[in-house]
Length: 65
Image (cartoon, rainbow, N blue to C red):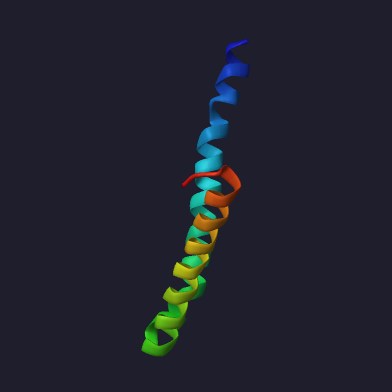
């Protein structure tokens, strides 16, 4: 039974590693765009706009004023 709990305790570490790897992959893909100031502004604008859209959508869905 202890092997079972030891195995289950590994899943959170796996999830954190998976999420960190996904973020690392996307940051590596965006790195060339950040060398040019025009594309860097566009990338940050798109990321900022995406977060604002996500925030407003969740605010409307949850009924937060």
